[in-house]
Amino acid sequence: NAGVTQTPKFQVLKTGQSMTLQCAQDMNHNSMYWYRQDPGMGLRLIYYSASEGTTDKGEVPNGYNVSRLNKREFSLRLESAAPSQTSVYFCASVSGQGGSPLHFGNGTRLTVT
Amino acid sequence: AQTVTQSQPEMSVQEAETVTLSCTYDTSESDYYLFWYKQPPSRQMILVIRQEAYKQQNATENRFSVNFQKAAKSFSLKISDSQLGDAAMYFCAYRSAVMGKLIFGQGTTLQVKP
Image (cartoon, rainbow over all chains, first blue to last red):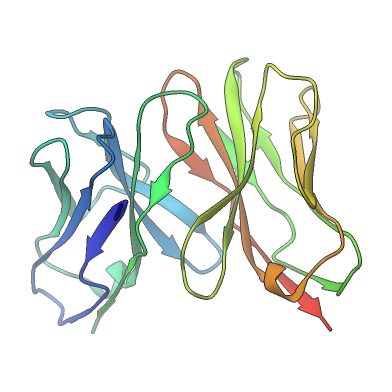
């Protein structure tokens, strides 16, 4: 059981380049999330998808777009990367509301030069 | 909007001793869930313990326990008999029963000294 799979694990971009971070889960979860982790700031929510076909902005959505391709996959796109987007990105999923814990991928370390 | 605050950026504990990590949160909701996650250097996010707000009894998982004070909006994590493998960053998190988003605190880095 793979859980939540993120690709790539590491990426280096130049300012202005674009890229898509991929996330897939095999647990039949309804909700999926994208977070970024920066030193001293914890994990901050970028976008989330409560169910297939819906997406909503989180705390820090500027500079990002998302696609909930199907129930399994939720991708995060940087159209024009900026140094401020250097961070570690986590995808997570959960079956529903309430006390179910989120399951996280192993993260993508992105550096924008 | 809900917020979660961890006021201790770093803590250290001697192996086999007990340490408490602090967390406070702000919400106007009555139904919610609180979590502690551990992040070792591998970057993996590992659930440590979970507390339902409607339960008065504090959650316990082996050497990990919480002190949940709903009126004070406080949710601290106690680690007993600390082990070297407990060294990690610990995040407190809040999840509304309605909205479902998980909101994190800033994290506390725990060092365990042999």
